[in-house]
Amino acid sequence: SQAWRFVPHVTQFDRADVTELEEFRTRYAGEVEKQGGKLTVTAMLLKICAEALRRFPRFNASLDMAAREIIYKKYVHIGVAVDTDRGLLVPVIRDVDKKGIFDLSLELTEVAGKARGKKIKPDDLQGGTFTISNLGGIGGTNFTPIVYTPQSAILGVSRARTEPVYRDGELTPRVILPLALSYDHRIIDGAEGIRFVRWIVEALEHPLLLVFKGGL
Ligand code: CAO
Image (cartoon, rainbow, N blue to C red; front, side):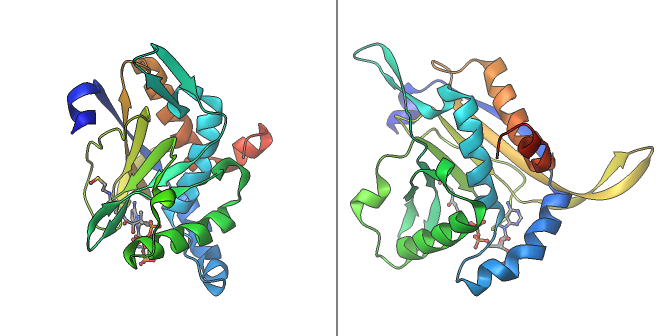
């Protein structure tokens, strides 16, 4: 409620064509499952967001109103909203930028299980620098997440669906993932907001391009 009252929110929507990424995910899901994890869009977004946060430091910063300063974090700790029977919990995955998608899948499965199994410790919920809230496993076309202060931004993810998309002169079935980024307008300008989301969309659509550019 503090965030709702004091943070001037803007929510930027976009959509990513994740058809190829979904093919990759289903191809390698079995391998991750053998190790006890689940390769999902959330795990892949953790990795992509970590790289985006490195390139757009204001999204990995917090505002100290008393000192009138923006504090840029040198680490990337991403909180993941988990729906439990006791309500919403946001465990934090640390140093996401230093981990691969495979390990992140295992860790995400582990922390979500801990949160649901009442095994999460207060420390596991502290220190996040950015948050991902994926409601797409349940459904929904879009939603406007609330920034988890003192963080400056949160990425909301809704359900990926196969839709007819006009491409190269014809309608083709493509898997489209809706994204909604809410951010603190005191720290982040609108142009920066859309650049950040566009970067994430391009990374989801063309992950190889990022490897060539020295990203992921
Ligand atoms: N679009 C389409 N399908 C999706 C999807 C999306 N955006 N996200 C997940 N799915 C699918 C998964 O692929 C999986 O499919 P299968 O069962 O066929 O393998 C299924 O939905 C369940 O996924 P999951 O929830 O187990 O996995 P996840 O890693 O994507 O998500 C977690 C983990 C913890 C984010 C999620 O379980 C959860 O709790 N989400 C709710 C978050 C929430 O409550 N946010 C609100 C905060 S504000 O009040």
